[in-house]
Image 1 (cartoon, rainbow, N blue to C red):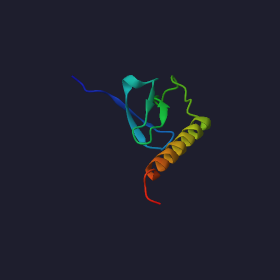
Image 2: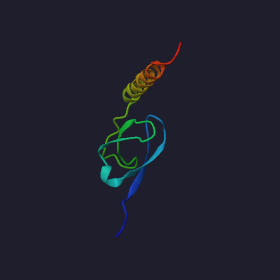
Image 3: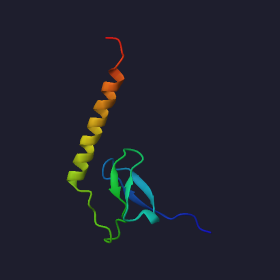
Image 4: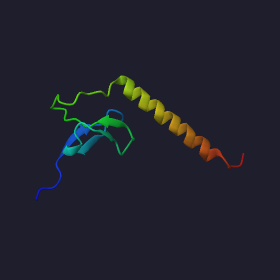
Length: 81
């Protein structure tokens, strides 16, 4: 029996090359490196449109900046001044 089949897609947020299972085609997936969201699609196919435009990338960048700011404020709580 054959194992799962994969295709490679670049994360639109961080640029990492992701190996994605074929059964996830057309579904939204999350990059395990930067937590960016993308729709799994084979770049050679036009079956699943690319909806990861500049607005999506800017929205994700803003989310990452806000998350980073929250982490920094949490790490400062309780530290001596």
